[in-house]
Image (cartoon, rainbow, N blue to C red; front, side, top):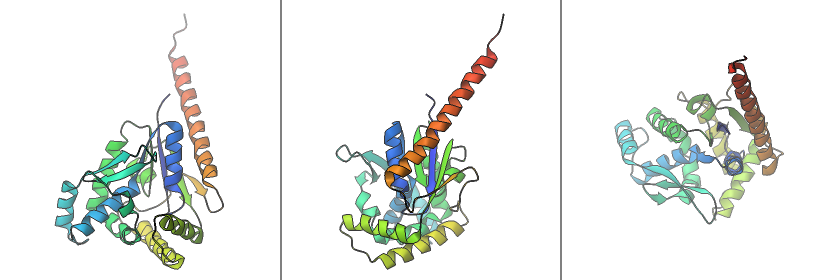
Length: 242
């Protein structure tokens, strides 16, 4: 069966990553969390005392750092590795969330991450979630979903995620962070967050994860059926009748 690219874009804490992981597992596809890559860059710059406006040092850092993903056999999830070390928990901290949109708006960072993401998905058979997958990274993705949700709902979900990792953050602080990130992501010059013209809107405010996964899988099934039918018609059209 032909493999495709599934692009899931949208705002923070809409369930993108959880949905994308489940869809990838269901299809046997690779899952790439592009947001984690920008978080890793942010963490690297902070730990190496590199100012976000020091472009020469940022460009040098992008050449030096190595970002990859490693599958955790116990949890079944892909974990981000920075320079060979798993840093999944660190990149999810609130201090990173407060700065990642600023870092991801730096053109050099954007260009480097997009190039790496395109290399990761060049053989297709991938599910990617982020902000600009369907518009910039893979504008030719066969399935595009754009996810949104009420900001209060998103904040409460994010608060639960942080609490599960032992980080207690007031919901008001998270709401402020999300609104700031929404604004920065949507107004940046380089690859802004926006819905692709051919992306299907998915509002997850009142949806459970299983419902979100089913929504995406239904679109994938329809696309795979359409592609198979198209291929069949092409084969029939090329047959020579004697």
